[in-house]
Every structure is written in C-alpha cells, then in structure tokens.
Length: 463
Image (cartoon, rainbow, N blue to C red):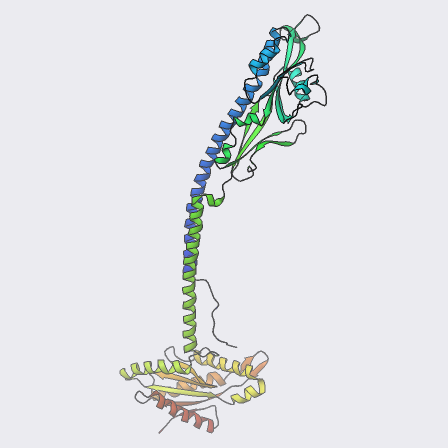
C-alpha cells in the first residue's frame, strides 16, 4: 500500500565530495610536511646520537686509561708501591674519579684516597662475592684494560664503574709467555669512577630540554638481561633511533626518541583546524541539502495524493487551468472525464479498508499507463478520479474514455490470494470557454446517469 511519500535522508553528493576533497588535500599537505619533519628529525637524532656516543666513549675511555698509566708506573718501579700515593694523586684529577687502587695478586693493598675507601683494603678482587670479579679475571686472562659496572660500590655511597688493568712483570721464575718476553702476573690496578656523576659531563639531560627522550642501556654480562644505565623515562615514545657505544670490552646503547605530542607540531594543529572547517562546510552543505529535500517533500505533499501518488484535487485544478488557457489560444477542444469505482463500499465492507486502499492504488496505476503524458490525472475524492484531456475531438473522446474503462474491468485485480473484479462508471463533459468548474459539474451529472443506467459505462453529457 502506498503511504506518505518520504525520502530517506541521504548525504548530499556535493557535501560529501567537498568534504572528501578538502580532507584529502589537507591530509596530503600534512603527510608531506610530517614526512619532511620526520626526515629532518631523524637526521637530527642521528647527529645527536653520534655526538653523544663519541663523547661517552671518549670520556669513559680517557678516565679508565688512567689504570693503564698506573700499570706502566708500577711496572717501571718493579712492583714497588712506595710512590703509589704520589702517582695516584697525580692521576686522580677528575671530580668523577672516585679511587685508584693497587692489588698485588688481586688483593687490594693500596688505595687512594684511603679515607672513605677503607672497606676496599684487603678485598680479593678474584673472590666470587666481589662485584666485577669477572672483569678482573677477563683482564688477567686477556692482558687488556677491561671495564666493569655500573654496580654498587663496596665502600658504599653509590654506584661505580671500574677499569681493571692487569700488571705483568719480567721475571726469570715461573712465567707465561707473551711475545718474546717471559712475564708473570703481578696483580691488578683499578680506577673507580663515580656513577652517574661521570655522565654529568656528557650532558644527557640536555636532550630533555631539546624535546627528546633518551635511554642509555646495556645487556648485563652477569644476568644477560637488559639493564638501564640512565634514562629520562621518555624513551618509549615514537620515532626513536638507537646507536651503539663501544667502550673497551663493553657495548652500551643510546636510544633517542621524540617526546613532543602531536599538538606540539604547528602543522598538526593547522590540520585539526582544517578538519573542523571542512566539517563545518560539510554540515552547512548537508543541512542545505536536507532543507531542499524537505522543501521538495512538502511540495510533493502539496501536489499529490498521499495514497495513490497521483495529483490531488487542488493541484489538478491549478495545472488544468494553465493547460486550458493554452488550449484556448490554440483553439483546441478539452474534456473532463470523471469516473467512480463501482460498488467500492462493498470492497471495504467485505475485504477491509486495506484491500480498498490497494484497489485505489492499482486503479491509479492502470489509468496512468493509459493516458497521454500531457493529460492530467488526479484523485478527486474518495473513490472518484478525474482526468483533463486536451486536443481531442468529440469522436475521439469516447475512444479515450472507453480505453480507460476497459483497462479497469478487463482483468482482475490480484492482491496475493485475493482476486477482485473492478469496474468504474464514467462521466464526460466538454469544457466550454474557460470554465473548468462548469465542465466538472456536467461530467459529474453524466457520471450519475452512468450509475443510474447500470454502472460500468460511459455517459457523455448532453444539454
């Protein structure tokens, strides 16, 4: 059954096209800008990583190489530690250098400064309970300067990084061959660096001020787990780069990443503003589209019958008068055809109003298929319909009306299992002059005569 004609609310093609175009352009501009910004940012991070890794490596290596100098001095003195304090005082020239010690046979015998470091005296660096024992063993076996730490210092007060350097002496006794000379192991010398004080000179914290997160980390050789050495807690952000730092036998890693939020980038703020503007334009265009839909719907409701979809009585009169004026100028004959469905009340009473509505809709559909495009057809009221026919003579109007009558009664109306025979009575009247109302009254009289004469017939009004 035909109900009130309502169009579903749809998106305006113009609004959607404008929105997609605007967002696409904004996205392209932002993408290119972000791509450029990321490339420049990566280059800047690579530069910072290179600068910091070189500075960390150089600072640590230079500080730890004091152990090599001490080893040379002890070797030159044939292991005599009489001048140890003088040597150590000379070498201990940095604020982050904590202590310098000598450990003949691995047992700490001398330490400078001694004050505050007394717990280290007598400690066996090869004891299994001593931190950086493995580094002492590696130094002895490899005859190389080895770095250990950071770990908790034995003397307390913080963490330390140590450099273990083995000392070998030329001797005629039991020896281990090394090149052309025979040497025996004398002991270990070590330099302790305060941690994280040594990193202060590297100014890693400046990275935070520059808008970067950082993490200095290593794989702990004792636990084989990742160990964070220093961090500002913000290295988990996106767009991170990482560099490797080689310090003697150890490998550290420096990770740098951006910590600025999306709104810290002007281009992103501009993009958001553009999206808001695009959305506003879309809303305006979409609203205008809905208003136009509503206007069209109201116009349709004002012109058409809500059940059958054909013209209503008011609009029929309006367009028929316009067509009649044109026909009069062209000296054309015009007619009014009014027809009424026979025994329609019995359809409603027997089969219900739903079936009656379906009959009205089907009648309107059949008639529309059998009239000319420029004729006007409307529901006049209830089960009564009206047709305005122009440019037709007296001999032809009967043929037109008969064609309409037959289209209704020659085939049954089928609605599911319901089959109905429907007919209609027709009244026809010629329009004299410009009086449509008069012709409608005459056609209505002829329709009444058709009903009286037995229905399902056509009566042409005659004076």
